[in-house]
Image 1 (cartoon, helix red, strand yellow):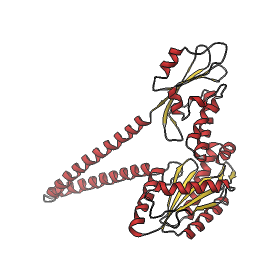
Image 2 (cartoon, rainbow, N blue to C red):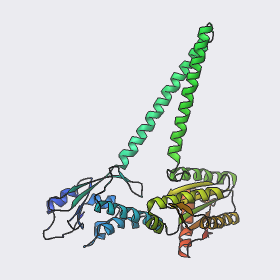
Image 3 (spheres, rainbow, N blue to C red):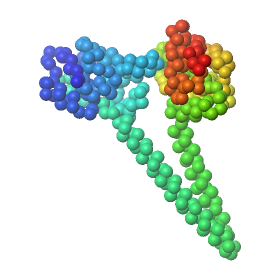
Image 4 (cartoon, rainbow, N blue to C red):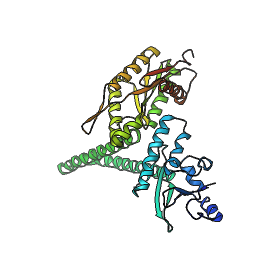
Length: 368
């Protein structure tokens, strides 16, 4: 069920209206003239990852939106959600809702609209279009594949034509050369397009390193090799300490500059063959194939030191940051990346809890 906050001199909405609003697939948030939440339907709480019984009265917009961050159980995800919710609440106050969809920290894509209420205040709508966007992407990829297959068939036909033309007179030979060059140009363009598509599908847009999906896929391949070759594998989870304070002090452009510098520092320090990726927000991860527990600890401690001494340059200032690192060594009994990553995440929280700016190893599977 949704939640009706009764504020102001008059009650807002009748029971029948509340029932109707709770039946639609669009999240609705009503704000009274003092910008306090007056009504939210069931779909609103689902999209913002909280429950109606969490929302007591009175409640602020900032508090209401930020509560969804506790659903993940991760402090990093919670910080990202709180920052996202604060930005959106400010946009509502400034009447500056962007035309493009909202991209929630959990990956959801939501259209946001607003309308002024006759009695004062606003009605805000939230429509989750994540599934529709993914369908469009899948359809676009299918279309590109179909066009590529068609072009391959055309190219094969061209190649057959070229073989026949090669047996003709000088004029035919000239035409063959022209056709061959055109064919090579089309092949080069197709390969360039395919390379760009692969890059878009695997690269994090902000830092230029692997995105979460590509990093997990690469690490799973390394996990599969463990059982075949006996080769070791260590996973490092890296989280920027107090990243919210960087955003608060320098703004999101400054936070982005800090994340880009962190990616540069990490890439410069890892070994050839190590796998670096951004899991989301200020959280990064590195896979160390073939590294022993001792080597992994040395690498992790070196990364902590390098990050602390490698500030980001932004707007004529230097942004210093530190990181906490959780380290776990994969065992033969573990078959998925998530199993090892879960232990690395526990070690990361131990690093956070023991003062931050340090690396902690999870040793529970060492004897496995």
